[in-house]
Length: 310
Image (cartoon, rainbow, N blue to C red):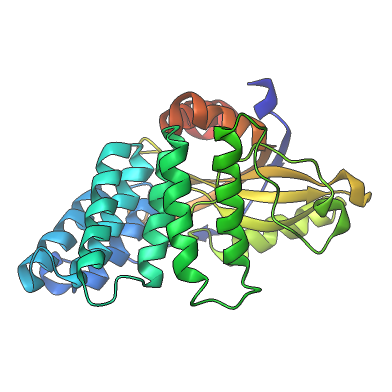
């Protein structure tokens, strides 16, 4: 736990509200999936699961179980299960979504690449690095044909492949993604978890506020990348982001994890209030994920945010 207590930054921020629920019968499949993700953001994981399951049921009723229109619902359900720490059910939904896409007339889509990436990240957390690398490579093969050569998402996938193959070979990990800052380019290779293309759920104004407050203290955070959210029982949710921290000295750049902590809004059932933010070592984040996945990370986050979640 010592590695977890790197730095404490408390942000007194405005509450960020999420749109309220409406009856399933009044919603389209797309609206239900969107609401499920919002409920997951607000920490209402049981409601999010119910909404995602209802969206899938409606999609199957309208289009059939193997129609490409059901893919988004399967992906949403997979994301919710992943946030709950249920890797097996998340995997099942991702694989079913991919199976449908492969049978369709256009299997090599960006949606397929995103699902492959998320599935690969799931395999990584289960220490199935060979399977993870394989799916990352399949995703890369798709997006290389669709994105410009300089698109940063290509580098993210290449980094993920290097990480998985490096671990398989007993090395410390893959090389970090190239950055225009020389100090970051020359950083020693670090054992990082692969980047998962999850939903970026923290409002931009919250991230901007944190970055500005840290910059006022000569601590500069860049390259924020979302990780899977961690639902803390019924009390709220924490959103981890990988980032690069630099001080006045460019040579001091290091990779960190930024934890945005929110509590459930007692006055608005589908809203959260962002209250605190902390920076922790990326090594401690990785250690928790390797030890017990989201469930282990949740327990350690509770200790970090004792005043919010214990």
